[in-house]
Amino acid sequence: MIRKLTLGASLLASACLMSSAAFAQTVGFSQIGSESGWRAAETTLTRMEAEKRSIDLKFADAQQKQENQIRAVRSFIAQGVDAILLAPVVATGWDDVLEEAKEAEIPVVLLDRMVDSSKDLYLTAVGSDLVHEGRVAGEWLVGEVGDADCNVVELQGTTGSSPAIDRKKGFEEGIAGHDNIKIVRSQTGDFTRAKGKEVMESFLKAEAPGSICALYAHNDDMAVGAIQAIKEAGLKPGEDIKVVSIDAVPDIFQAMAAGEANATVELTPNMAGPAFDALAAFWNDGTVPPDFIQTESKLYTQADDPQAIYEQKKDLGY
Ligand code: AHR
Image (tube, rainbow, N blue to C red):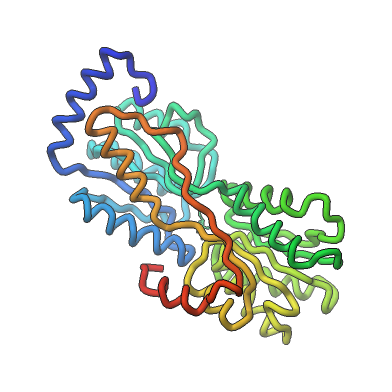
């Protein structure tokens, strides 16, 4: 029903929606887990945005497991919530449960990651252009190394997740045509600090000493773990090995201020604000939002006063 209302049905739905909007809404939020500082901030901000709007938020932490997310969404449907926010851990395997939400006439809004299901199965998605983020990181490296040869190691996000797929693609696009820059190793670090460190240790062991020129990490947490591994190997992160990553969490600004990281691409953790705004309009008069509500991506480097940005960000729930 979400995208295929006839005019009559639309008016009827609007009338019902308007009357239900007069009451406090209940929204179920199926969160992936707490793998990164960015994810913690997204959870905090979603709770704050819900509170601001007097929305009763039902929160379910899936501990990185898709089956837990599917169970949570089914439970939200059974409870008859007014909407569901879903941050999908991986891109595939959502058709059945999204169909069930659609049949129950419960709008679903995707947060920060995409699914490969038909767009008719969810109301909208709020997120960044994930390919663009990777491209910005790749282009930054191109500008940084010029014509010098540069062997890059890549820490990918969770296998099968849309940011891992798209940020890889974008980075490859960003360095395309610059044959002096080569990705020599690429492995998942699952978006966590611990795994980022572990995989970076294995990269450092596998490659000839001094041969890695840059690290590209799909998120800052993996970069922070990798920075530790680089230091333990007796090298200087940010100098011997350039570090570029994505998210713009406070800890990466601290690393940038210390000269140990070079650049990050910001991903706003406030996905819930635009999501609740879209839902409010939908509840009020049936306004159907665009398929995709895009948030901004901004590149930060050591030239941007990272210590000041750290101070601004450190108490924002990361
Ligand atoms: O989907 C967004 C990604 O998921 C963030 O970049 C990462 O930190 C998180 O865990």
